[in-house]
Image (cartoon, rainbow, N blue to C red; front, side):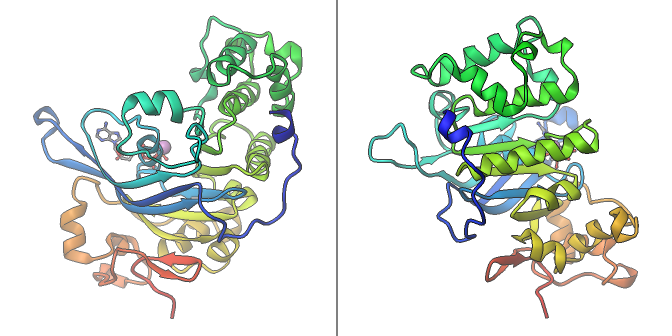
Length: 343
Ligand SMILES: Nc1ncnc2c1ncn2[C@@H]1O[C@H](COP(=O)(O)OP(=O)(O)OP(=O)(O)O)[C@@H](O)[C@H]1O
Ligand code: NI
């Protein structure tokens, strides 16, 4: 572990490197029981993404658009009322001698529990503190996780990992309630790497942290990618995404509406939703997007009526004229955009 953890950050790895994880038209619906009015919530629609070694992909979009549901689907952590379609192929399964792939959406729970979670896909959770067991020290939890995921690992690797995460040895001897938010986040980062996974998902890992700690946390995700892992960073924070992500995918009302290299997408957004998110930043003029996203229970009808469901809020569609654009993203080289192809 120490060689990989301490590896220097490699410079630009090509966007064309073979993916470690490929999502092909992932869709998730939640069926609502009669007590909740029946019907269904369309939380993720036809999401296609590739996570590549050495790269950080930021998945951004307003609250409730489906980001966390997408991550939960990859880890097999959706509730029983969820229906999942599509494919999510995880390559390089090192537990199979010849290498191999695991289809995450159809893998049985025993495979997900034994081979995938922690070993092939690490998770850095939101609110790190609440994910730690309150009655055991951070060290006990880290050592136990390393023993479970990598029985042959050197017993010193807990200290090495903690040191890499920025924790002093005595801080590891604290119980979770004695750790600050920033320290708990570092423990969570070390725990996510305990099984040395090639893919790391971080769902809002900077919630509640101040700006220096946000920067530190996302820089660590950059280091993790620099070790040759593929990182998915789910965040509302476009500044954090811009700081660390090599690639970005923008989600609106369950669909990925635009994706591509961060510098290109943020430098010259093609979808008016991406442009709106950037205008809402302080450096963009603090101009929030008017209105609210549509209800995810009504998307199907709205798409039939309008095509792109952003049209209700879209400055390019004055008077809320319907946008006849195709909601399916179309490839343009390394970039993809729905409904509003470049001129
Ligand atoms: N078990 C469930 N049953 C019904 N609807 C659900 C369920 N879980 C999530 N949802 C809905 O799915 C949608 C997407 O939720 P999700 O948590 O992925 O949003 P998000 O983009 O991660 O938002 P945030 O940025 O606030 O974390 C939301 O409308 C949410 O209410
Ligand atoms: Ni979320």
